[in-house]
Amino acid sequence: MSQQPVLLVVAHGSRDARHAATVHTLVERVRSLRPGLRVETGFLDFNIPSVQGVLESLAAEGVQDVVALPLLLTRAFHAKADIPAVLRDAPRGLRVRQAEVLGPSPLLLCALERRLYEAGLTPADKSSTGVVLASAGSTDPEAIAVIAAIAREWRHTGWCAVRPAFASASLPRTEDAVRELRALGCERVAVAPYVLAPGFLPDRIARGAAEADVLAEVLGPAPEVARVLLERYDQAAFGARGAAPAQQAPDTARRPLLRRTA
Image 1: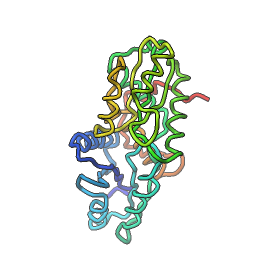
Image 2: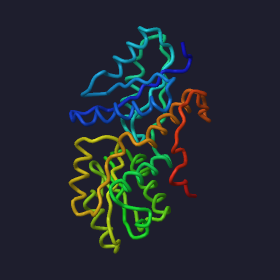
Image 3: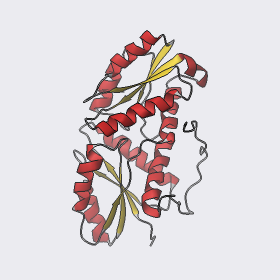
């Protein structure tokens, strides 16, 4: 039996069936990149199996070591409170380590650009295009600051301008950021949802993008997102450098589209 910890992907869950379907597709991509790794999925709410149910099943099988990875882009309430509370109730004898959230990461910027190019933009459009980095929103100041920092960093990679926007809890809204970029004189405006799966708030982002020229898809099962999951798993399971096991499947698109700027 493999001694490496089981990866438990912890998703929020949603009444929207597209959410769980996207999560499962992303998890399948992770499995394809690391065939020897056991990957399970648990939901905090709305969908099954629950996180607690998965942990109980793993303990009943005799599994001893689990890395619980929050399927979240920022470190806000769910990462700081909800998920730790669930993990504290794990069955006795089961070692559970909580991995870091996915963002920020240069790979996620690569995924955002992938989605914009799939929506019709080209690298030649960057200097004349303003981008709205549209996230779900949070009441957590740390999470809001991270989104603003990502927007500043992304601007330095060649876009005409990048503005953060939020679907809830914070301002500005997507439609306001679109209008601001128009007023700045950007030739075209694109909206890049910084969200992982479809649902209520992503739909609100889409409505706010009505006056934009381009609306990208959610990040979903983009290959870069799957690679970030494995990076976070490796960091939690094998130490700060995240040394991956030898059986990792080859990735033909290892080179990132972006580099982190100073």
